[in-house]
Length: 207
Image 1 (cartoon, rainbow, N blue to C red):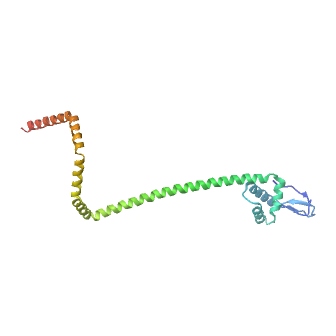
Image 2: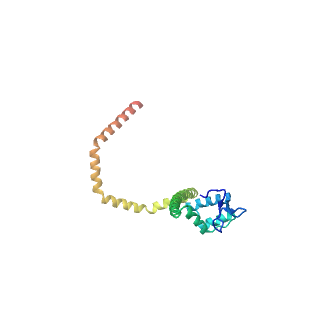
């Protein structure tokens, strides 16, 4: 950083940024506001937030004093010999951070799109159900007639299908019924006995 000095000797014809000539034109007197702005802008350059040209333009606007990007580079070279390496490292960090932020935003957007899609799907389904409900209420008689006509039309088909299915699986049904009756014979006897007992009790009560 440039330190504020009471006055230093002039060594060249050019007056460095942040200084002005004394009355006798032998000493360089520091201007505090300009040196503060220069120190601020140098930090921003080292962080990689400003290029040399952009920093020079910024200084020109804030201090109303001209400085070239070459002049800024010389100042940095004198004070920070490895400043270019630090800028590269800072830029890499910023790029990595910006990439992570972008990825996070994209992920969030995708998640939000999924949520919105599911929401719309649900809303559309509910609307459809509501429409169906209204239609059924309004056309209850029509639907009933249509169902009856369909049953009448397809009654013969259903009968044929049942008969064919029964003929095909006749033997299976017989075997299954035999097995079932043999397995559940005792249970059935007990059930009928219980029923008989209940009937007898009721008869006694009536008489």
